[in-house]
Image 1 (cartoon, rainbow, N blue to C red):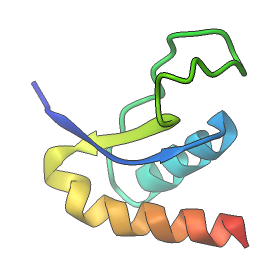
Image 2: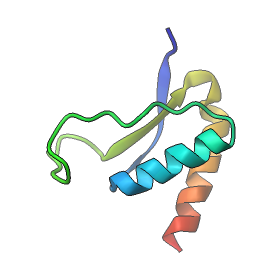
Image 3: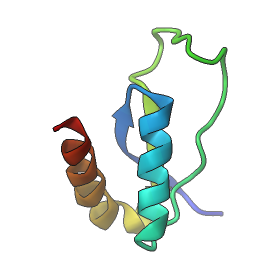
Image 4: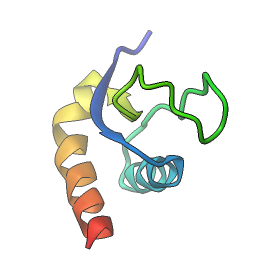
Length: 74
C-alpha cells in the first residue's frame, strides 16, 4: 500500500483539480480529491483541499505544485 503525503492545501476545488491534472501531466500520481461533505460548504475543520502524492514523489512534486499555484495567483 502506498503512503501519501500532503504537499499543499488549496481553498477551491477547481484549483485542486487543475493542480492534480498538471501533476499527472508531469508524471506524478496524486490522489483524487476526497469527498466528505456538501459541495461548496467548508466545515471549518480542515485547512482546505489537500493535494496528496506518494511520499517518494513529495519532494519533487511540492515545488512544482507551489510554482503552478503561484502562476495561477498572478
